[in-house]
Every structure is written in structure tokens, then in C-alpha cells.
Image 1: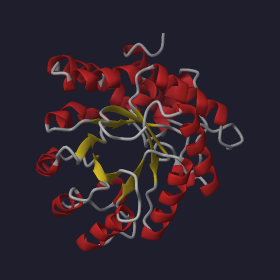
Image 2 (image 1 turned 90 degrees about the horizontal axis):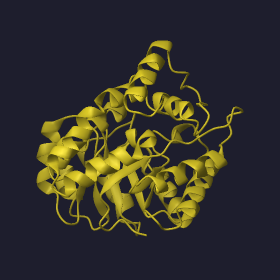
Image 3 (image 1 turned 135 degrees about the vertical axis):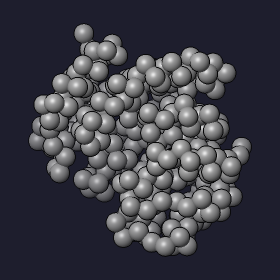
Length: 296
């Protein structure tokens, strides 16, 4: 499987943990099966939602391998190789490619940041040295820095730059960088409450937390839009806003792992510094899940 022609719903997969904090590999396989059965178009492992920042290198590779093996080429698997060290991002990329991922997610250098040319060179260094398509990740709310419009224009020309995961929440920025989309450079929404707006700018799908709990709905929304049923897609987006807002009522992935536990798919264990969902947010989440038909 490769990423050629990838559209639709790419789930930002959680990493389930046992009560003792170790990775729950049986739960991980159960999640993969859930997505394969419900129309998910691609899987992203080791992103923010996957709590990769609290996992060891060995755990990262083990999780990626289980997902790649379980998927068995049926849909693309993208591995999160982001780091605020360019050399570390390269090292992660090499390990994930050996495991067999179909693509990589590369992020801006958080915390230490850089200037505009440094951020360009950070991405270019990895893009020049890999042989799989890469999704550039713009999420300044978490990283403290953005991929400038000029850098998007430059990076969009690179043969290994498959596209951009746009999660700034700034529709003006998304509109400006949409000018650089092509048959070779794509945009995916990184915000579940802005999927249809991004699709309207020429986007091809979403990297989704919402899809963790409602994969069929997110797949259907994207499929409808891309098939020309814009009204149907918009209805799904708007009808699920309460659920989406509840999934981000506190820091991701706290609410979504709580939701998956309520659905009986995994346990609720998080790794610190993430902590149990507050009572108020839990009540909001339960109500939204019932409203979306995910709970009785």
C-alpha cells in the first residue's frame, strides 16, 4: 500500500495502555480491526493523539509494527516521526521506514523553534533522505511556530512532500496555502471542526481524532464531499459539532481515550502528565456521545 490517491479519513490513532502503564497491544489490534471494519481510509500512529511524547523508542517501533502488520497493506499507515531535533526526526524516520510504514508525519521544531529558513531546512533535510511520502504538520498552537506560506510554497515542490496537515485553525492561512495544492501536494484538515471548510479549499480529507470514536461518520462525510454531495457532508459536520467539541473539552487525547473506554474498546489509562478527565468535561462527553448515538 502507498499513499497515492489517499483521500478521506485518516484516524489519529490513540495508543492504549494497560493499568500498569505498559502498551496494550491486544487493545491496539482491536482498534485497528475497528477501523478496518468501519471505513477508515488511513491510520496515523505515534502522533500527539498516540501519546508518542511519553513513549520510548522501543515502544514507538513496536506499536508501529503491530499496526503495520495488522493492517497488512489494506490501507496506508503513516508514522509520526516528528521531533524538535532534525537529526532525531531523521533517525525516527529511518526506523519507521524499516518497520514498513507507507508515509511519515513531520512536524515543525517545537519549543526551540527556528527562523523561517531553519524551519525550511528542518523539513528539507528529512525529505531529501527518505523514499516515502511525507505529510508536513502545521500546528502552531502546540509547537509555537508555523510553516510560513513561503515555506509551504517551497516545500510543495519537493517530490517527497505529499502534503500538509493544516491544524492552525486559521482559515485565512489555509486559504493562502491552498494556492500551492496540486496533484502532487495535498492538504488535510488537522481540525475536526473544520473538515468541510478545508475540503472546500481543495483539501482531500482529515487527520482525525473524531474518527477514533466515529470512523464511519468521518469517512462518510469526506466521501460525500469528494463525490459532490456537499450538502450531505456539511450536515454530518454540523450534526456532530457537539461531539467534536466534547472530544476537545480538555487536552487531547484525554477526552477521546475516555470516550473509547466508555465504548468498551480500550481502558482509560493515560501517561503523565495527562490526567483523568474532569467531572464536568466527562458529563459533557457522555451527553455528546449519547447525542451522536455512540452510547445508549
